[in-house]
Image (cartoon, rainbow, N blue to C red):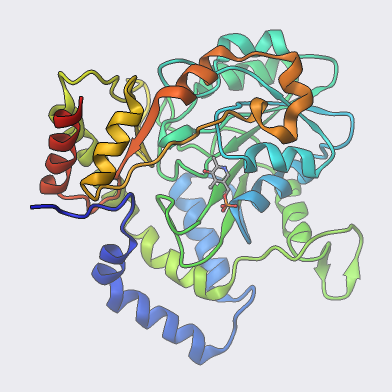
Length: 367
Ligand SMILES: *Cc1c(COP(=O)(O)O)cnc(C)c1O
């Protein structure tokens, strides 16, 4: 018997929430207010309350959230921003959008997050910010990064695209520790809408006002423009969907955590390195990513069995063509080694015991 198990299944969750979501979306259509209306402002307030942050400003995507945060921070040409090479390209793209230069620091071999012990050596006179990613839903070492930023007067910008609802050491939510927290609501993220969406959190009222301007053509009053901005707004339909899902996010994240625990138990004893959990933080398992020396073999077996799997990420950013100049300068051996062996298994809140068992059975047969 073969069960088809996708990497991510967005249909089950929609079916479970269909009544609520359909009613809210229908209400938006009836009201015919589609841009910067009541759902957007309500959602921003609800997210700010949930995360315990002063301000939340929504925008059109997670990539835009990073871009707008960097602009609101005043980062630009000549500036260097320290970040991780083991992330989605958007993290570094946003740094380039403002004319700044990403400086890649190697990762911790256990968490796969930026290795905080290597950050200080990468600082230069031009460094203005550190941009950690809470990869796969596990918070980076924010206590150390916050202290480094305070000592060296740097701006701390968190890429929380994969970590909605995760808590760093000391129990603060990711996105509430840096000057800015940048979220994506891409459909497959832990809190996902039904299109593109993003949001920036900030502690500063001035920065929040700049963000609101930047996302709306540099304008806070209609037809009055004092800076060059963008068209980067979350729309009312997406905000309505997100308001429904936000009410369930703790339960979704708990279910991901339970699925990860099941994988851990089922895969124990196989020649794999299972995901490390930093005991100081709450991991929300955007991905369940392990290391596997025989990765090709494992992937072939999973595919033959109709089970999804993926490599996040096959090539670290310092080895991408677009950053070729940096590649010549630097070798980041931990990122390179992890990229060779990492493998992500199907992960979503509704992943059943039976599905997790089937994945484990196929891996056990292959390895
Ligand atoms: C998804 C993602 C982004 C970009 O978000 P979009 O909403 O797709 O623009 C940025 N950084 C990381 C780490 C991501 O996973």
